[in-house]
Length: 157
Image 1 (cartoon, rainbow, N blue to C red):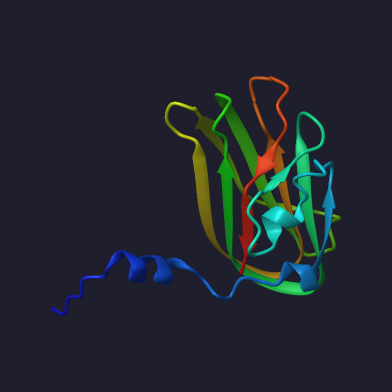
Image 2 (tube, rainbow, N blue to C red):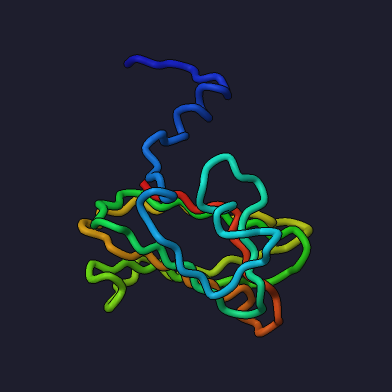
């Protein structure tokens, strides 16, 4: 058996995928709202730090419309909430016909708590051929509290 011990720097470098799609060039984005101080580009493009925040309260949708069909193999989402205790739900869906019909990839809930769980990162490994639209629907609090939705980062490969 061959064995190697990775140092922390090597471990982080190995988990970074240099093949993320350049969404700036490959897709148009539709959103239900955005806070001008936290535009959607801050969650979708590399080297941005503030993430996206909705400009309104309640359920929100982020839809990527690809200019040409894409084969999607990985979708990484990161949500951060350090102030409000809540249960968030999101649904990730895809389309091959420009968004006329969608198929679910995943629907998931997460409990945020300022005293404990303040970050959720989901790394979905998929094999989706010919994707023309990818949609993220967020319910920021299934308990019905009026809270703006947010997304720290979304990467697609």
